[in-house]
Image (cartoon, rainbow, N blue to C red; front, side):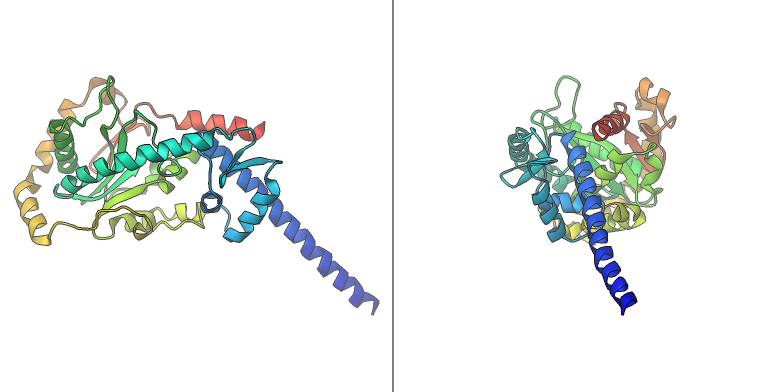
Length: 320
């Protein structure tokens, strides 16, 4: 009887101990998540905290813990959660959401043209950590996935179209412009090869992609190839159909075949043209690190790569 009583007590208090440890782990994960988004003045809803928390759990669990933390580790206002004494970023988020809605209409108009470019299979808005988080006066960054052996053709035509429409950004004017700085061939390498050490920003960058146009389930294939992102954010739904506001109407197969027949053989010529026109400062650092990567599978231009800056700032905030 004595040993039965001991076992019952052990199991009872062991269960309490386990719950305590789980709650402690969730609290730490919540603080880390909210801290990262604070770098970009972006408060989170409870659902967003759950999606980005990086711990497999239920939404209800996160909501309960969030309520326990309000007034202690974090603040809350109008359904948004943020670090203490940072309630001013709630209004910043509202303003940026309004900017995004206005820019999305322009983006979709461009994408309706781009979908006829031979080779383009996916167009996503990138560099909007948290989603719908666009600054006033900024440009729109596109992440584009192309067919195999069509990356040079796709980029050339996309750049030409934005130039003709006056949508190419310049150092003097970036507001409402289109930045075409990241192309990836569907047979390209896993995107993890483009990461730096402890690259927390890049993980959130992938999770924050907003696909506007997609053909042949290419975006879903991209996520599956980079399946590690599902382990990092196990509560987030990465399927293309889970995002709103896409362009669902696609060019007919017949139209695409004709366009590919007409323009497809220009790939090697346009590769030589674009490499020749590449700015000397880009040629100097091309393929030296992950900032500027140019080959037949990846075209990535991020000369002002701030990932190390965000990583170090995030470390300092977490350690303080």
